[in-house]
Length: 287
Length: 308
Image (cartoon, rainbow over all chains, first blue to last red; front, side):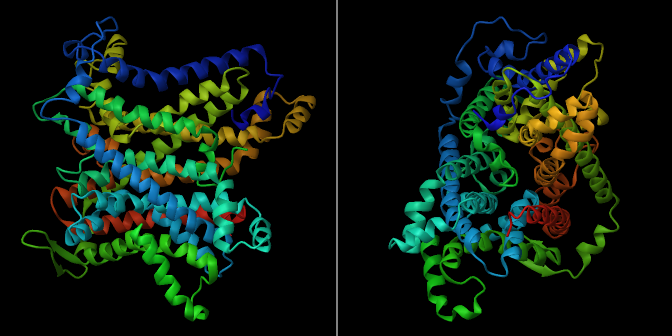
């Protein structure tokens, strides 16, 4: 599936002992990685009494009670889910659209200030969330954007947009400018060349950008904690709110965890081929 | 979409005096909407945070800023708590990023040497990266709970009966391990991409020369993937300072401030004690640190010809 197969069978001379050691280490890493996730999944299907049993219990009558409780009663998860989908989806979509335009412009411009521009864009992406959320809170309060979904979408753009611009810039930079030039010779305008020649060739880049932006904003906690209100809270906030002074319903909490985590794992693995390029913002390529 | 069209129009209007604009022509018009939005969500907050750092911010009865001179800044240098917060940040940073680099690289080498099932193993190992940090924190709490946590129970079987989140040292180590659990896969992924691009002819030559596995790794493989590892280090460095979700949702900075890093401290100063001016000073300091990392990252990409 990935480029990793090209280096198949390196260091064949490794001895039998080292081959066994490698397998043991990989299996250890798999256990360390998967036990927490497996335990969360398992606990989400347990009856309430068994979730917090003093001795870990793997034999139990599985039940959907925890999920049923999440989507019924006074604390229905539905609105939280809708807020998460709308805020993360819109932000990812806007970031990808604006990022495609700006990333293309950045890849093709020959302006002298380009270096400073790149630096400014990347530094906005790296700014500590706590340092950004503070002024945004005051600005949003003044503008009346607290507890609104557009406000949340805009706040998510503060980290998704620089990411999208950089990543798509890397994808566009790989394409030779001769492509648009020949399209223009054939009578296309600059925009038509971009829209009908360049964009279709960058589809993997666009999909990867969208998916990673979706993951970043879906998983956000710090922005939503400060900027959302009763009407706009997202899933991560719902999860943290289950932790109360009086106690924690761990059965429901593991169920929410599963609801939050599984969709992102699926979309993340769907773009695994471009994950290295995406997560390093184009600095490392897998091919 | 509204901002997109206005952005285009605004740029179109100004293109008449093209000679004075540093981004001319089609490329400039393409960049305009994105950069305008980015300016709105980054430059404006930056200006606000600078102003806040020189003010006393009153939230009750309408937002009001009152000049405070350099009060917030001088307080920074006479605040031992803040110095401790930064020391803990440094410790947390070194342990998490250091651990992730070492373990991630080791794991990548193991996967690289695996003959079968490498892709399946990698897919499973990558899963923690997609877990929301807040869920990592809450799940960590669930696993380490002193009465029913799976990991506490396992430690109990091994003879350790303390409360993991109640003790200063174990609480600090626990939040560190949660971060390592989540982000080691990223380093593995990046390092593996570097390893698979090491030409096999080089490895064969080393093997013909009789170099053993440790020597091949030390003298050929590690130098070959050093640039890629540097990228992983920079990416992790930036993010290690960005997030505070895990700590906030597990220990909240405790016990006895043992896990109170600069981010947690900033959040607490602003949204628990409502001292926005002092929080802004902390924020600017954190920005300064990440800017240095960003500077280095861009220079690195420059050398590879990616940023030009």
